[in-house]
Image 1 (tube, rainbow over the protein chains, first blue to last red):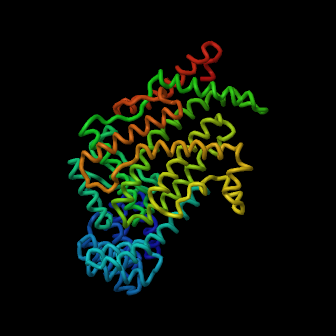
Image 2: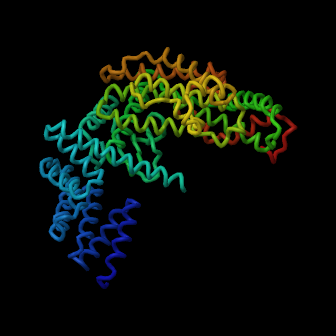
Image 3: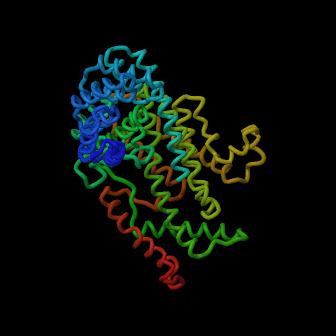
Length: 152
Length: 334
């Protein structure tokens, strides 16, 4: 299979993820990464699927690969923060989520994970700020979702 | 608890306390098409072996946490009732459906007599059971809503902003519901349905102190009168409208709610406490039904009874219509 097939493989894999068919998605992600190991998106998306499958350590490793290729990849930092949180490694999770939120201030998950990690590390006041930002973004998303639903 | 999603400390505590008190396990599930308020599928109400809270996939942070807190409270009330006394839900039988449909029909006749453009017979017949089920659904949910919200508000301070957003959203949606049927259903029922929601919102606005929870703004017609004084609207131009009447009946329903809901919302978690909340909800439901003169429309029964009734609903409707109209009705119409 040629490298040019990678975007299509990633799209198909994403569809599987939406249907919660993570194993099927993983097969396609593996193939995409084998064909183009320098595609940071492939590593990051596979990490997301692995988080859903509760393979958190593997997900962190995939995020690290994506970040080696693109150190400013906001989504990879966000996924890494989420996976590290699940591994109860709150300090590095906080660092990752903070970086993710700095690179993409509209990432509600990153702000939320940051809030939880701050709370876990005893910084309640700072966590309130992160939660407030996360809620603000979630509400914007929810309003958009409602409009889409009404449109349909 | 089975989940791979991040949760705040207080929510994890609520879940573990719920599981401990009820000696059960809770599963959290994200679904793209889940109802905005989330759904609780519990072992006490449905024929399943595990409790599941389902919420929309786009709820990733505090919105998700609020849904979980709310549904855990519902679960605790149901579970405590099942363990402590007898958990019942409002169900219906062929006889109770007949009583409900007959009353709606008589009220519809009064309304139709005043209308220039009459409702086609087929539509009128369809409306009877549809309206009956709408009330069944609403009265099975509505009285529990202020109970659950007041409890969550008092126990989980960190969710208050989230709760406020959800309540504003719910209030608007509930008042908008049935608008497209306003000219079809008898006014009495439109008014009573809106009154229930209005009373709920008014109760929550009083119990959950916030300037932003102002139920009057949820009335759809208000949107047209942004520049007018609320007081002016409610005293002059509006007095003949269904919305004005909803406010009047809603105020009366608020008195009923306040009578029943004088509860210590901040008490520690215990089965006795939640079993008491269940009793409060049942008594409130009964009083609201009495106020609406619908007491004989529904019966308190085991959840399995309701599941069976839902399966047979089309037959119940058909039988009730036959009983009301006898030979006047053709088979093709029912």
